[in-house]
Image (cartoon, rainbow, N blue to C red):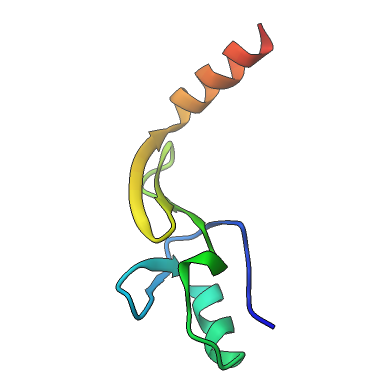
Length: 80
């Protein structure tokens, strides 16, 4: 058994042995399960940087920063 959460939003990140980032909860769950923490246990981590933006971490690496307005524009485009 190993911890898994497909997407997590948290400012609390932990480093894996290969120097990548996962959510602190998945890291602690891996330690409790006596398995090595890996990015596949938390492939998408959203780290809020303000009230309207988040840094997107994919497979332990910073992918990009996203603003709320950009998400809302995408949602509006899909409705059309």
